[in-house]
Image (tube, rainbow, N blue to C red; front, side, top):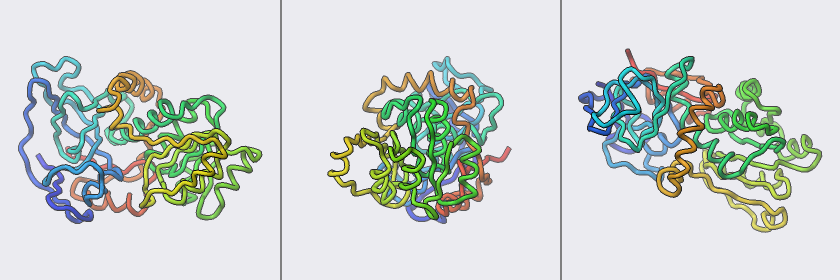
Length: 328
């Protein structure tokens, strides 16, 4: 089988394609023939050595994908060969076959979803679900401000927010990409490059502001979001795709009675509160079956163009997800 290998840290050009044996399952393992794997910002950061999780070199990047179960171990009863599944792994998804240990999350791939759509579901859905349900407790009638809304993590929050009954204001830096976000559920879109999103949010809420801010961008965007927040709002710190953390003014947090909530969905499920994992096991397949948070795939690449897949994400060209599709 072919895999994408990172044997030294750097930009996307360091990645190479190598041959490895198809893995055999242990008693509790599941081997999946991968149909597609999604590219995420953590993949880029991991390859460059800038992510908090630093696998030993060499490693196969990729944290989510979808495919068909190829083989199962003797103790596996929940999956069988031929099942179409969505999976998470850290790392290893950029491979024609993956071996999944019991702690790796798998779920059924809906019948009407492609492997590409399944590959792009898990990271965005888990992040949005943990943020909006477990951390911010979003309810019907809330005003939800979603930054970076055309990315996979942002778009999942737009879709889940609408499902929960929130009024969604989505921001981004490109009108064409925001038009897709509007088609997929946002009530209002704001191009922060051509308009002041703080003034726009205030105008759309009669001066009140947003009840929940979902921010995977960081930097100046989160700092300015304090001014767009309503009294008692919940600010979800999801990431720093802008390149750096924010410096929030504590006086603004105090005066507005704000709650600033850090979001680390994977860490929470795996180590801090594993009991929450049962919620994901039940709810994410149900939401997927309903079509909630169904990924939008704007770019598809073969495995030998993996560096190009990384670059379109870096260049902010992706709407929803970019995926690598495996041959065969």
